[in-house]
Image 1: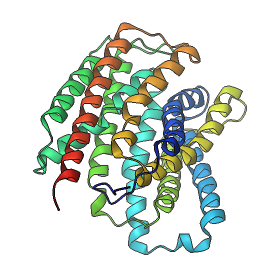
Image 2: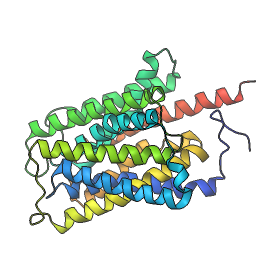
Image 3: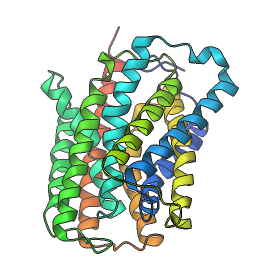
Length: 317
């Protein structure tokens, strides 16, 4: 098999599909887990502690599989991973956890799914020239985001007001923008060579940071009021983090990026479906329109990027 533009030799499709389906389902279902967790658990402390537990679990897995030598890292690598843990994981997931008390999971997933479009925007600003299909996708996706954020469009949950839903939806969009910006700049920060070690450090840093912020803003952990549903969501998220990230890391090293990036428009479908059947969230017109427009825009971007990569790979060296 011929290596692609990244120097990666792609695995057979039958080998790829298992991790890919795992990524779709597990990553997409984390929105349901967050919604269950925050029903009776403080959002930031709950998210912080599940990140700490998830980092310990992932660290133990790496230790058993790779051995102690896998944890050999330099101080600059640790600093870079910690910085990304705060600017990406803490801001991104922390904001979603706070917003999940007011914004339906399907809407939250749709807003986050615009992330690939922000990255295209940053690349364009830096002088990169995306394909016309990619640019069409960015335009369509941003129109979908605007439709989602129109005040009064989204059906509130937990007795929230339309103003609360709109403000927290905008907050998720800002967090997605922040996630995309620092992901785009990630190459400028030194990271551990093993991406799983990077994940361990990022999750641990985000966990400690969010827990401290939660304590500082007055959140308290009261075992007497935490329901079984919230514990179920918390435990699910602890195991979902290493599973989803492990599948993602394997895929980016063994699968074509055109397939890997499909998570961006499959995750909202999973989130909307689980939100409707399990969380009993309303499947309203705004969800249908947002799902169609945003997912369509991201699909355009993925196909446009795939065409660009194919042209680069076919170009004589």
